[in-house]
Image 1 (cartoon, rainbow, N blue to C red):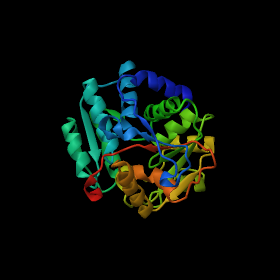
Image 2: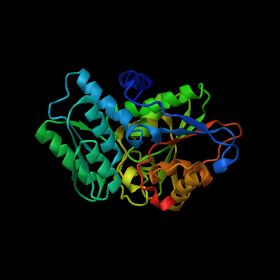
Image 3: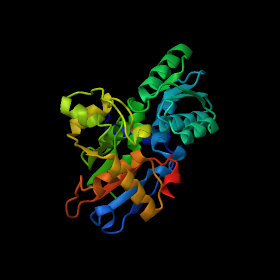
Length: 313
């Protein structure tokens, strides 16, 4: 389980290693929203996504405990988690091995190489890359960095929530968060429990949390759609499910077309190019899937921008 104290400890540990990303207030009426809407521009984080927060917390905590092996670290990723682990490992001075599915966008694979990681492409889905990464960790003695279901990873991601709350002077009611495996959701919901509501938004083709809440436990699902490269986990993480159950979270589903349209709208109105998975959070507002109450103070986490912008031109 992730608590606010876990996230506060992570914030102290990674201070100076990650960027404080800005918050932009949206003009009244934009995106079908109330006047009190903010965008958290986390895509400006190192490596282009929030994942650097969790990666640093995992690696630095291991280093503090004397448990960071010479073999370095290993991760499985659709791209963003791997980029973050590669960046953090290089910053700390240890090698990184990253397993990605063959469907990972080439823009992300190229960035992994630039960051000095050794890259292995295995299988068509994240689950296959994950199995290969776990096997490598056991064989090589490397530190395994989960993309979304480790306490240190979730606590690190949750620092985004503490930062957002501080930037808005504690005046925050609701945060909309895109969910795949659930690491960001778990961390932010744990950090903001008792301070703000966190709403999960998922693509219709990857309803990991939605199906888990319906079943009363995490379950495997088939995955597909435009956001599969960043939200393509087959199963919600145990930590995220526990946090969702504890905080009585709701999950909203949005269509692929709604995600595409929200991504385009961000580009047209704000000249912000984000991943499809990131745009899912905004799609909950643009489709009316989430309708804020009068005066409700809402923030949308724009969590990643490792995308090919050529289709936005």
